Image 1 (tube, helix red, strand yellow):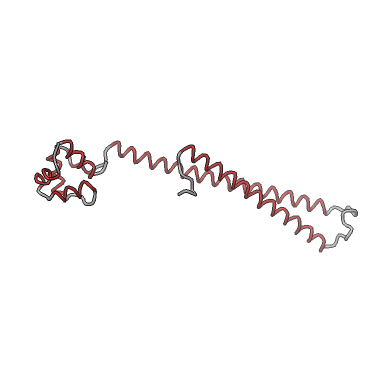
Image 2 (image 1 turned 30 degrees about the horizontal axis):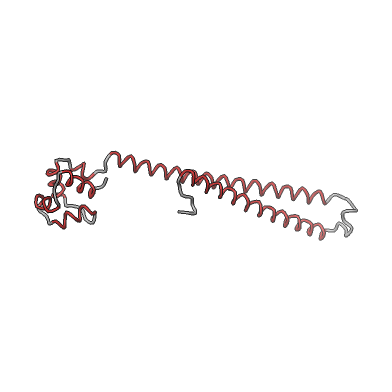
Length: 177
C-alpha cells in the first residue's frame, strides 16, 4: 500500500472528511485531495502531524506494508523466473539448431565423398575437378536448403510450444512484451 492509499484509508477509518483532516493538519482541503490521489506527497512536518492524528508511526505511513513487500518480491521473482525460462528455452533452441545443421552437413559431406568413389556408371561426364566442384556445390546447396527448412521448423515448433506454455502459466511471451 502506498502513502496516498494509507492516508485515504486512515481518514475513512477515523470517520473524517477531507475538510476536517485539512483543518487538523493545517492545510487546504485540496492538499488532502492531492495527497490521497497521489499527485503530491506531504512535507515532513505534515507527515509527522498525520501520524499523530491517525495514531500511527511515520514508518507505517512511508514504508510499504509487509504484505506489499512480499507481493513486490514475489512479482520480481516470478518475472525473473519467466525471463530465465525464456533464456533457457532460447538457448535450447539454438543448441538444437546448431546440432541439426551440423548433422545435415555431415550427411551431405558423406554423400559427396561417396559420390567421389570410382563408379564409372555414376560419372558418364568424367571425373574432372570441375565436375567434382559442381557436385560439391549442388550437395552443399541441397544441404543448406534442408538445414534452413529444418531450422525454420524447429523454431516454429518451439515458438508454438512456448506460446502454449505461457498461456498455461499466465505469463507473457517475448513476442507479446
